[in-house]
Amino acid sequence: MAVTRRRATIADVAERAGVSIATVSKVLNARYGVSARTTQRVQAVIEELGYESSIVAQSLRSHRTNVIGIVVADIEAFSAELLKGAARALHDSGYELIVYSGGGQSREQAGWERRYLSRISGTLTDGTILVTPTVMNAVSSAPVVAVDPLAGPSDLPTVAADNLKGAMTATEYLLRLGHRRIGFLGGRPDLDSAKLRERGYRQALTAAGVRVEEELVVTGDYGEAAADEAARALLDQEPTAIFAANDLSAVRTMRVAADRGLRTPDDLSVIGFDDVPDAALATPALTTIRQPIQEMGFEAVRLLIGLIEGRVPGQPHLVLPTTLVERQSCRPY
Image 1: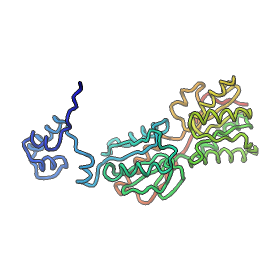
Image 2: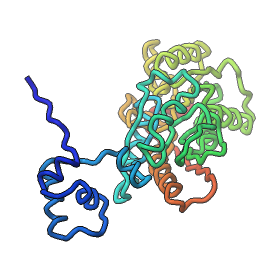
Image 3: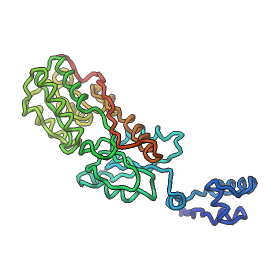
Image 4: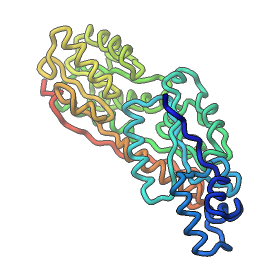
């Protein structure tokens, strides 16, 4: 039977090193009044015992934890890419990262981030990044940065991609290929980025003198089941191309089309949005609009640390550019 090892305490360190708890505390907090020889002995015992001070205890002593939090509703393709960028920004920053996920259970519950924020803010973290928050009036005693907010710009500092321009680029690309019956498979109606992507689609068609056919506009929620249903509804209208508001929906659209005997791109051109890793691995490889997800995570961390340290005034709103990534899922009509 496995034996659980008791976690070492500061008292254990003091006893093994033959010093007081106060002396260990001074070593941990790099305070004056401890000789170099004693400091070296205490540090050796800390290493030997694998002692780690409690984040909560550290925050109570210094009012800082040097930890930032990222709160997500679920770990999926978008948030996973965002976390890669966030981790890169932490290099040599002196900060550590904790991730709090609802495991998808909170996705349909407006205000979920308020509950999670109250659990980690203040004593566990010096600041928090909220990913696609449902509300923008979350109250916290520490700085908060929102990434891809549902409600759009607010008083909270935000980081987002240029969703409007990206959607226009996707639609204009299909128009240049000669398509005119272009379907749009939308995202979550409560998400600001999804609204902007639909607006970009409509604006690009209008600017090209192409009438927006409402039967070719179908709303999904970025999930697989909704994408399949929306794709079937769109394919019933026989478009020659479909612009899906995220890559998962685009890949599901290609699979639904294949089930109907339609080949991509010979019979149907499909373009997505995001450029998550699965886009390049799809068959055929998906043409898409790349939003810089890792860079969004990177910039969110940099912004948050600047706010924590008082180097960033006000409530900045960063909008990062999107780019077209051409692969094999589209062809001229």
